[in-house]
Structure formats: C-alpha cells, structure tokens
Image (cartoon, rainbow, N blue to C red; front, side, top):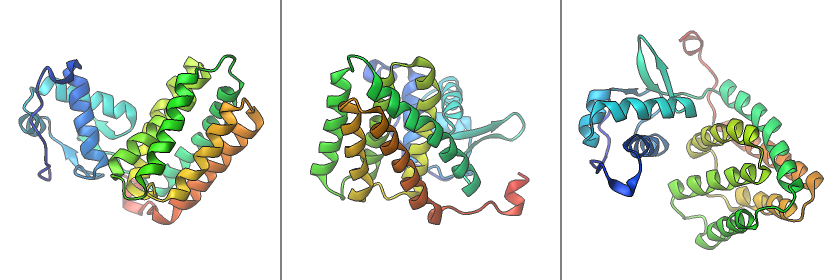
Length: 233
C-alpha cells in the first residue's frame, strides 16, 4: 500500500460510532486519490495508521463495500474499486432511471419540506459565491448532499434506500473525472431545484434527465475502456 497522509482518530471525536469515523476517513482518502483505484487495503496497516483496532477497520470496510467504494473477496481481500467505462455507463443507466423519477416525485410531494429546499438553494448559493477555485473535496461533498436532498424530498423510503448509495458512487466518479469546478456544470442544478420548488413534475423530470445526460457526455472522454486482462479479473 502507498503511504497515505492520515491523522490518528480520537475514539470519542464527534460522538460518532468509531466505525463511522473510520469509514469517513477512508472515504476521504479514496475520494482524494490517496487510496487510488486498485489499491489493496491491509487491515493491520490501516489500524496502525489511524490509531484504532482492526475491528472498526473491518466494519468500516463493510460500509464502504456497500457504498461501492471497495471490492472485497474472501481470498484476495479488499481493494479500492475501479470503474471502467462500461461500469460508468451502467451507473448512468441507473441514474437515468432513478434521478428523473426522484425529481418528479420531489416536485409532486404534498406540503414539501421547505427546510430541504432552502438547504438546496443554500448549497447552490455557496458554490456560486465561492467560484471555480473552491476545494474539490468540498464541491464533491456539496454535490452529493444536493442530489441526496432531492431524493429525501420524495419521502419515498424505498427510492431513498436505492438512490443514496448510487449518489455516493456517483460522487466518486465525478470526483475523479468530471469538471465539478466548472460553473456550467452547476448551472443546470438551478433549473432543477426551481422546478421542484415550483411543484412542476414534468419540468423537474425533464431537467433531471437533461442533467444526467449532460454529465454522462462530459465524463465519457475521461474514462478508460476495459482492457482484456481487466475484464477477466
């Protein structure tokens, strides 16, 4: 494993379960590229670097595996997942099914939660005020929160359970390849949130579909096709 920059974790830091604290730190390292795709994660080494026992490392790995950040097999161990062009295309097929649906349901919700819509506008204002030079990690986190808010506005627990892991997986893909620092990439969100806030399901659905297709087209040049030896593992 490459040497990564970490800070030993304090057990009671933030009053969160240690598993969640470790998962957040490993997720940060993956998103930042400190743990690149294909990197093997060794429990003992990570436990030493983070100043924790192996148990929360193991539990955190299960969380990240469920989110799609790790590939874990019984014989080979845990590796930071790789996304091929085909896997990215598969992800966007799911996004094209779920995100327009989420936007339509969010716009159709009776008595929408104004606090969530207010937060969505606040995220867009924050990105607009900070300009294109904002920290990429912060932009990635805000982007994930914004898309998660849309699904939360649906109040459909089944859709939320399906969509949030997809959003997080998408965050990783965007963090690696997409122009999150491009203002045009954020401009499309304004129309989407405006349609949801106005209670216009047709416009919200169309805006969400357009956004997903636009991002997919922007990503394609950055993705490498699967090489023959990669496809066979």
